[in-house]
Image: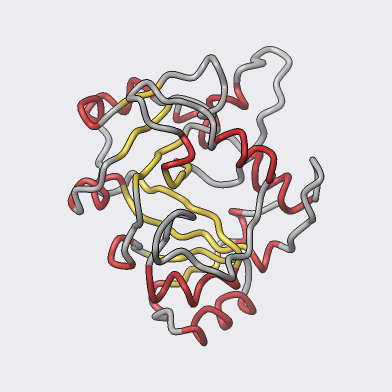
Length: 207
């Protein structure tokens, strides 16, 4: 069985959002503590779509804060390159906020997870009761693959984008560390108040 302490979860955000995260944690857009100056990344139309998808538990997908189980996701590729009407964002302006499945459990936060991209009709949803079966539910090979185009496996991209969805705000004590693209990024978030020991340069996490 996977060690849930080492089953890391990755939330990408713009580096300009780090000061607010240090004060309030990762907040939902509907939170009283939401960042009024939030700098978005990603596809705005997809975000709108997520707000209208009903999960099997009766709640809306948009009510949850999404994390990925891996890095170098299709979303990141779009963000860095500016496809789908998304303005390109340099890698050094994108920060991974990292927590773990066990940390979310320890903090008693409500969560749902999926075996693929949450908006895809082929994706299944799972709850806290399924967490011990995580190894059998997720395709870790797909999640960890660098490339997702495979003419022999047209479902690879969907499985790579498996999500871990957390309800409500996530306080700063849930964040185990941060990964950034280069030294400039590291210096910038250290200057914001992040402990240098918790910032790791991982250029391989980017395109």
